[in-house]
Image (cartoon, rainbow, N blue to C red; front, top):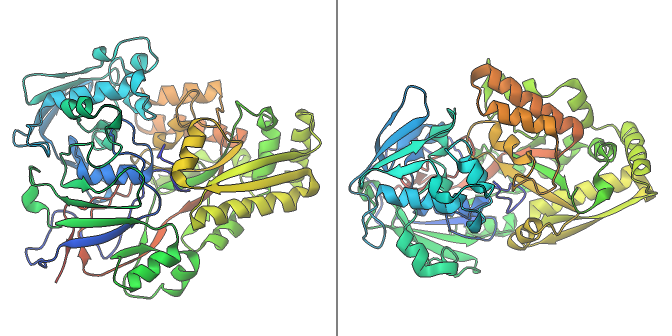
Length: 541
């Protein structure tokens, strides 16, 4: 995600029995097609190469578009690609770009815009946190590592409207990647015109999606999207305007919903319980995990695996889930449950060995034993650290619960201080390595376990804790050139290593409870965890 703005980190996604499948927009729409919506945290950037949190991904997904887009349940649909062909070995993809696609400044969108965008993202000078996702595209790994020039990336434009992508190996989830915002095109003229300001405010950007961004200054908590008159499929875009505001307090957001100032609002645990049978109550599934990351590079006190195991076993995840609400459940793996199946069984069941389960199960007695052993290994008599969290209500509750659990379990041998700060500030602190322990969250970018597991490979930009395991790295690398059940078994072995070593400490997985006005129709939802999309949404009479 990556995208750890709030505890969910990356991309906020939604589903609803009230929301119809995409592409079935009614012609009987109301005259006033203005939607009032919310985000839970600040917007960081709308620069395609530099987005990394859920709010930014959601915003970019409304105002930009790539080769493909995702419909409900991760169904891949053509977007800027009118046609695509793939070689027999699966390593060469050829895309025909729509000839009627334009940028919001009226310029024609061509294959070269993809070439420029991808090369800019993998160039180490851009410092994209997400450049690792290009792995498998010819020369991408070498470019990101600084061993080859960005110009050697396996992508080229053949004429104005044909794009050819060369892969080093067949990527099983390649079509899903092509619908991910990181792979969207960029307008070279705009990037060069705005320089360091590019993507830092609405006015320092050009767009090619259903909407155009307006009114975001880079730091304010409200903005709007308006219909893009140059969008190639503008006839299917019903909304004329989306008014966004950042609402960190669920109770405040619900009051605005009741007052008619929001058309949808996220609910806290108490409100969710009270409103379960109310009209508009909606559970939106999210492929996500909230977890702890310890800074192993900067603080040697966390390097003991036994100490981290003790901390994990001291946390009663079932009790935590009850505290946060019915939409939360205990997480015993880093990869979220419900993401994908192997022979009809959830991947997480394949991944969780009895040993791994031991270290993610609540056991106060064993927790003390492992914690004491860990202290001894690090030459410590007690442990103290600051837990960094975002300042939204749910993140605060989660962090304070962890604090209470650890201090109760280990008594005077541990002191945990919770520091809750604005999401954007927290993200910058974590990126700079300026933390001891951080409450992180990850939402799947696409429906595959590697979307989670790749994050914890050695040197990955989202491996904030700098955990490293050679066998884990080998398994992840091997999975990228494998397929089918054999590939899933490699990923399952990697997941098991991560949990046994407590490279990260999973806490909860959460769906989201919303109240949504029944007149809001046809929001596209992708269950894999990628952004929602308002392209086909409309407000019914």
